[in-house]
Image 1 (tube, rainbow, N blue to C red):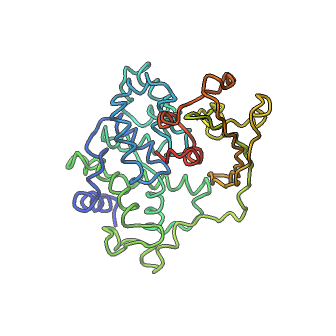
Image 2: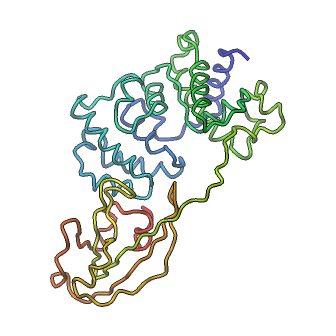
Image 3: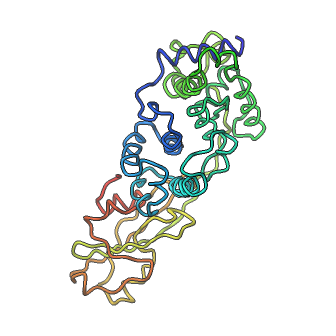
Length: 349
């Protein structure tokens, strides 16, 4: 199948069978498209929709987000995970507001100079908002390309990724197709995403519904789910321990701001200094049952020491500079790591 034919089929299929109901598909506003693309990194669409709508309600423009306190950004982000995205989101909004007058750059190359925007994200924004012939290469697109063209090489290798990037660029709609259909770039880009998300599934691909099945190498092999190839790492996840102190006063809990770098950077958490209870001559701490929390690269084994306090807030010790007594009713306004939110009974946001 020729390049033109492949792109034409995907564009046509997206018009008839692709996804059209997602809130960020109803706009060419770079701010809104950028926000959705950052949220969708390593997060399912169904999870992102509510977060996206809440963010836009509170921060309708880059200027609004730039002027916000990072704690408020974390609070709205809490539960989405990968919190470095929220830090980069805030930093990017400030640069766009302060250095670009609130307007995002209009091409993929310049978009990549902003915090948190990599080549694929930049290409998506440029294609959706400006119609630029820029190639995305997220996980869904890698799977579609590997299966369609029969790429057998390990996609975790740098040289394979370079080859896939070249292939993705090669398969973009031609200038002729774009001239005939001005929305072709946006349709093609969305179509690749839709194929990977709804048809070319990782475990149970729906080849009978695929618009390019007739030319798909993986389908002809009879085992499309075998591709893409990614070498398995047999190494077990390392385990790390974390001790937290839960000072539970009437209606209040003591929180501590995490360092900007490292796990849960910049979020509010229970204090990690478990000697506070002894130093402040509080009642003895009781150890709760340890529990594990899975992070991307390791397993966090969390030990919580709980102290029940009966004193009124004004009688409690003055916290350290990075600590704060917070009313339980106000916890939803704070960016908390998921396990801490669950522990304190304020859900996952």
